[in-house]
View 1 (cartoon, rainbow over the protein chains, first blue to last red):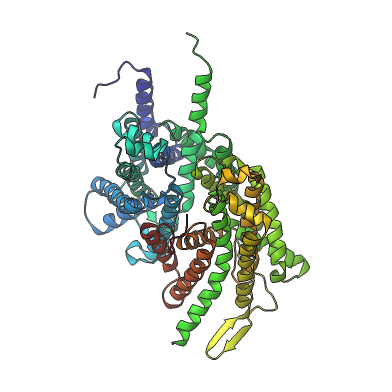
View 2 (view 1 turned 60 degrees about the vertical axis):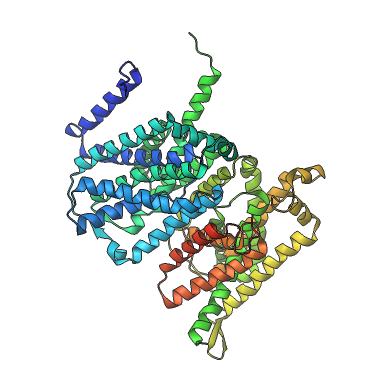
Length: 311
Length: 291
C-alpha cells in the first residue's frame, strides 16, 4: 500500500491518534477512563455498521458477540496460561466462529426474521450463562488484573483504529461493492454474480471479530464478568443508536455517534439519573428514524450536494 | 398420567392462552402492514398499569376492565399510526422495526421514571382460589383469563371475517390481498392501517389487563412479553392468526414444563432454540401458512 502522505486528512488522523496515545501521561485518570469507553463504543458502533450500514441487516443482539468475547477471555485467563495478547485474539476468532454458526442459516432469511433471531440469541445466551457453572453462574467471575487501566486504554485505541481501518478498507474494496449491491437489491446482486449469502456471512463474521476482542479488554478493565452486565440488551441498543445517529453508511458516522452519545451519557448520568438517559436514548432513536434516517453524516452529505462548490 | 405432568400441561395451556392475545396483535399488524411491532410487550405492561390504576382508584375487577383497556389502547395505537408510523409505510420494513424498538425503550423507561422498578400485582376476589378436580388444581383466575382471551381472539377473527371494515383490512393485507387493488376499489389505506395498528395495541392492552392479577409486573418486564410474542408468531407463522393460537398454547406448555421440571433460566434458551430451529427449517411457521 502506498502511504497517502499528500493527503491532509491522513495527517490530521495520524496526529490526533498520536496525541490520544500520549494523553494518559498528562491528563486525569477520569478523563482517560471516559476516553477508554469512547473508544470501546467507537469500535462497537463501527462493527455494527458493517452489518447494518453496508449490508442492510438489523442485528438487535450484537451484544452477544461482546459478551461471548468477555467470557472467553475471562475463562481462558483463569484456566490456562496462554499469554494475554493471544487470548484476546482467540476471543475474537471464537466469536467470529459463533457468528458463522448463527449466520449460516439465519442470514438466508428476510430481514425482520434475522433481527428477531439475533435478539433472541442474545437473550438466550444471557440466561444460559447465568446457569452454566464455568461462567460462574449468577455470581460471575473475577478476572485477574493483568493489565493496568492505561494499558487497557491503549488496547481500546488499537481496536478502534483497527476497526475504523477495516471499515475504511471495506468501503474502498471489492467486498464493499458487493455489500452495497446486496443492500441495494438482493435480486440484482444475485443476477450480477454476487453470492449474497456468502458475502453476508463474511460481513457478519467481520462485524463479530472486534466486539469479541473489545469484550475481552472490557472484562479485564472491569475485573469482573457477569452475564447480566456483559449481555445487557442496552449495549445492543446503544451501539445501534450510535451508528444510526452518526450515519451508518460512512465510516466516520459511528465515530461521531459514539462520541456524542458517550458524552451525553456522562452528563446525564452524572447530573440526573440513568433512567432519564434511557428515555433520551429511546427518544433519539424514534426521532432519528422518523426525520434523519441517513444520520448526521448523510445529512451533511446532502447539504454538500445541494450547495455547488464555489471554486 | 402423572398428576404433576398433567398439572403442568394444564397450567401451560392456561398460560399460553394469555400469550395468544398479545401475539395475535403482533401477527395481525405484521400480516397487514408488514410492520414488526417490537414494542408489543411494552404495550402489554402499560395495559397492566392502566388496569392496575383504574382498579386502585375504583376497585373494579381487571377482568371487567379488560374491554375498557382494550378500547383505550385501540385509541393509542390509532393515534400512534397517525403520529409516526405512517411515515414508515413504503420504506424498508426494517425502518419500522427500528422505530418500534426505539418506542419500546422510550415507553419502558418513561414508565420506570413514573412508577419505579418495584413489582406490582392486582389482588382480586378470585386471587388464590382454585377449582379442584381430582388431583388437579386449576387456578380460577387463570381459567377466567383463558376464557376471556379465547373470546377476544375469536372476536378479532369474527370481525375480520364478517364485517365490512374487516373485509377492507383483509383486502389491504399484504398476505391475502393487494394494497393497490384495495386502493382502487376505494379503501382508505391509511385509515385501515391506523385501524389495524389500533387493533394490535388493543390486543396488547387486553393481555396486560388479564396479566395484571396473575403475574407481578414491572415497567421493564415488557421485553419478556415481546420475546414470547415473537416466538409464538414465528412458530405459528407471521401473519397467520390461527397458527398463533396453537403457537401460544405450545409455548405456554413448554414454559410450564421447563419451570416445573427444570430451571426457569432454561426457558429463554429453549424458546430461542425453538425460534432458531423453526426459522431454519420452517421459516413460514410450523404450519407453513405464514408470510
